[in-house]
Amino acid sequence: MDWKEVLRRRLATPNTCPNKKKSEQELKDEEMDLFTKYYSEWKGGRKNTNEFYKTIPRFYYRLPAEDEVLLQKLREESRAVFLQRKSRELLDNEELQAIFHSKSLC
View 1: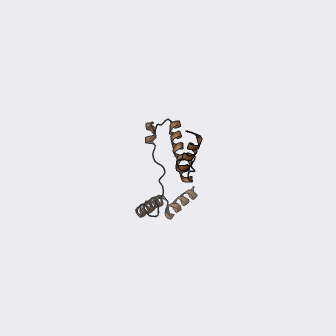
View 2: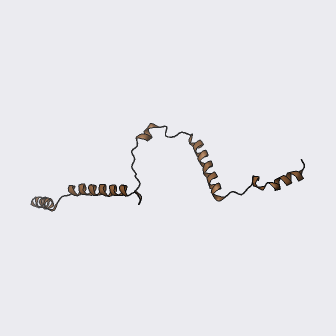
View 3: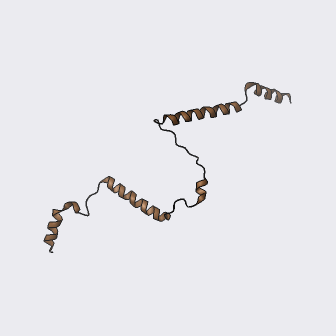
């Protein structure tokens, strides 16, 4: 096969060109795939093999979205109950006066 035949075949099928320009999204997808592959190789391919990680309590809960009405109501109600409980722990005016007068007598 001479070079003229190779050139004709190449020109006849431009879609199979290995140097075809890729879209930006395809490049990002390919980059993410490569990153995931190399990261998992670097990490050793293990996923939480230590049992200690399963016993760590969860300390962050995301805020409910606007369309999650039930979760928003639950959050509001739990906050109200929490504030009521803290309010009951505070001293009222009579208790504060009693403490103030008992200290002033000493």
